[in-house]
Length: 492
Image 1 (spheres, rainbow, N blue to C red):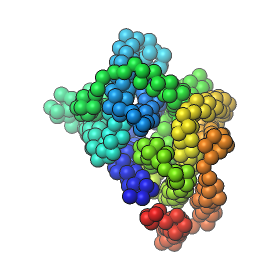
Image 2 (cartoon, rainbow, N blue to C red; image 1 turned 60 degrees about the vertical axis):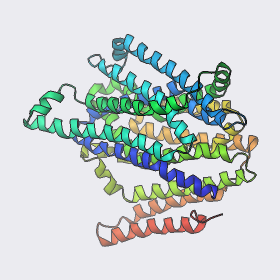
Image 3 (tube, helix red, strand yellow; image 1 turned 120 degrees about the horizontal axis):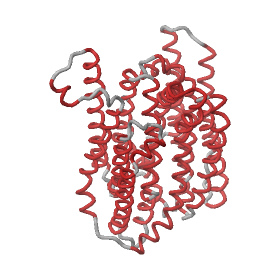
Image 4 (tube, rainbow, N blue to C red; image 1 turned 90 degrees about the vertical axis):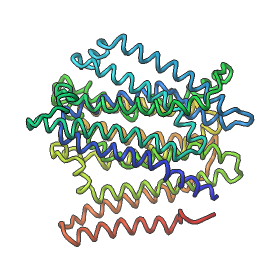
């Protein structure tokens, strides 16, 4: 099979669990923003920022490390898998025990002294999600995309179902006074937003249990020699991952820390909630990037030995940028409709961050594509250096811009950070593992999509048939031009 068709075919399958699955989770945003005030939603936004950081910490680059070592000549994929699983299991359970031991002090530091249960719930969520990472990676390595999709669909389905039950059913019924025996048995109004976390907790437990047979089936014992080599390769990825997650989520943590004294708790959490909700609108591109990464990482490693590998990597970049440019244009042309995913108009003041964050996520995706050069050359320390550079950029700009601009400062910081990392990665990559990327196409797709949106705003057509036909024409024309140029479905 044509390798590009295989890549995008698997991207489509992984998309059923990552794009569709995360999109379904994304559809919880209307439910949460409809039922919770902006400051209550700020709690959800902040807590999941910590989750993202901790999952990276507890997996410490083992997924990428597993793919690298499982594909080496003479390697035993199951032995590599087993060694990685054993190590992650030890550190994950140690983290859970530590969090339970210091539950109240951690809650005090988070400024939720009356909700120390959050610490316990999230410790289990993070620990089990870290433990689930390598069994899911094993499914990807074995090209078991459908099983991978099934596990993730189960996880997403349980999480969504419980959210709908607790927040979409029990909460409004309780508020209206229509309490029945089932609600009395299962619902406590004092828990409030905590039911979002409880739903996640139950879903994570179930996902972990389902993956146990896969782990046991492929487990072949622990190997110290393999572990040492894996850690040597993976620890720079951990540094890169931690620095990267700082770039992705630190703004939501710093918003509270930097604005709390001047705005007070309620207004600070409100800003955090508005920013977090509108970030979900921009995450449409991130959903595609996530599915692409699931398929692309093992694909890139598998292509390494092909004589035409670099040409394939360049072609993948063209296709990737074209697709995300199409997504950007579609989101911005139809933002007046997409904003209703946030039904509460109190959140709409934050829609101005959407184009900034869309382009920020585009550059993050470009960086992920480029980053293959330091992984294929086993120079993962460069990934750490670049991620640290990005993290320092994020820290400095957030400390400067958040006090002056609030969450708009966070959005601009994210864009500047990722664009800077793309530039640094490109020049380093051309020195150590040169790939002849078609920069004219890359910047052409992005520039034209932005220009078309800018022109559409200038036209400012009144709502009606002409308005609908106009934006449909712009979108279809750009999409059609991309297909004519790239012919992504053509063999060869």
